[in-house]
Image (cartoon, rainbow, N blue to C red; front, top):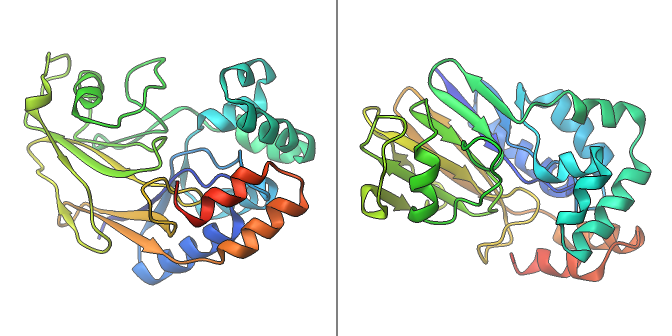
Length: 254
């Protein structure tokens, strides 16, 4: 059995992360993959880092994680994100910064899976929102499957093209929006980009935490949505003096 739980974009939301891991424990997986952005926006970056470090066999660095390590990088974020990142950097201990610093931006699992926060394209943080963006990402994908986050939206993109560097059009890429608990069948003869959505800050109008299971025995990708105590996260955010919009958006999944 080869089953991976896939989480991404936790954004320091400890209540959502605990709920996600409780669901993962029920799903009987072999390992957990974290696709980055463990910190940023939310009120518990230190405790989320502790939990991810302990539970995840593979973790890659997200753009918010990188911004905590490199203050110069923060300039590329909006005002609200910059404020949260400065606060995050101030409260993290050296051991947490070291944990982030040990994460790489790209990891491979055998010859099958590429794990990256944003995009397989080198030096690119482009969001893979649609088929047009996916055509460019597929040009750099050297494995059958890419696991990505960054958009906070659960999605699956697929192309029958198996050649790296192929100039694809949007018509060459299929797009699927996974439904809660319904497996999306993957084609072993194709290449696929899978996004599990966001644990800590979903942006698809569904405020429940989002995670996924990649099953390489039956070649499926299944998104799972999990309820968590949103009010508790909002209260923690308010107590820490983070921008009010960051707490508000949790309730609406935006």
